[in-house]
Image (cartoon, rainbow, N blue to C red; front, top):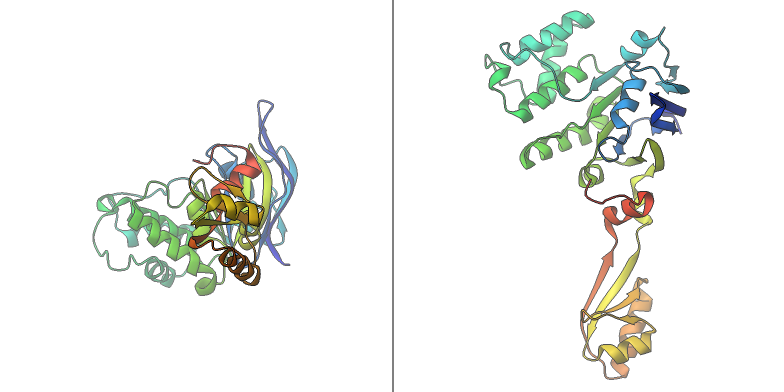
Length: 300
C-alpha cells in the first residue's frame, strides 16, 4: 500500500513531558484519514511536525516519499496544503484579495484563485469583506487557501471546530469529495467521534500522545460487539431455552448471529408457545469502541 505519510517513533517532548510519544502513523495515498483523539492528545503537534513547524525530539517522518528535515521543509510543503488551528485572513479584504496574497507569495498562476474559490463555493462573495463572513465561510476560505496549487496532501486541523450543524455538514461533504475531485490525500483531525465516522475511510486513534489503533474505518466498526434483544410473551422461559440473559428492562439478550440461526431460534420459541413481540439488533457503536481502546471518557 502506497503511503502519503509515514512516521516511525515520532516523538515530541516539552520539558521532559512527551506530548507525542513514539507515534507510527501510516496514511494511505488517496484516503481521507481521520486523526481522532481528545483535546490535548497530540494531534496538532503531530501535524506541525509533519510540516516542519515543530522539530521532533526523536523518530522520523516521511511526507509524499520525502523525509521531513529542516533542509527540505520548503520543498515538502510546496506539495502540501494545510489549515492548522484557526484560519488567518485580512478582514478588510475580500476573499479573492486574501487569496491573491497567498497566490503571490507562493508564485501560483492567477487561475488558482478562481479554482479554489469555486471548490469551496465562495466564488459568489464579490466585494464582501471577509470581516463580514460567517465562521463557516471563513473556515471555507482557509480551506481554499490550503487548496491553492492543487496540493497532493491536505492537513486539516479540527476544520469543523466551532461551526453550527449546517456549517459542519458543508465542510464534511467538501472534505469527502476532495480525493475524487482533486486527487489528493486528506489527513483531518477531530475530537468528535461522529465527525470522523462520517467523513473518513481510514482512522487513527491517539491518546496521551500514543497511537492506540489505526486502520480502515470498516475494521474499527467490525470490532464492535453485536447482540440481539428480544421481547417475548414469556421472557424467563425464552431466556432458559436460548441460554441467554434476561434483563430487568424487559429484554432477552443473545449474541448476534446470522439470519438462518435467527430463523431457527424464532421457530423454536414458537413451538414452545412463546410469541416474539419485538426483535432488534443492537451494536456497541464507535463511542464504545473508543472507550474500550483508550479507557477515557466517551465525551471527547
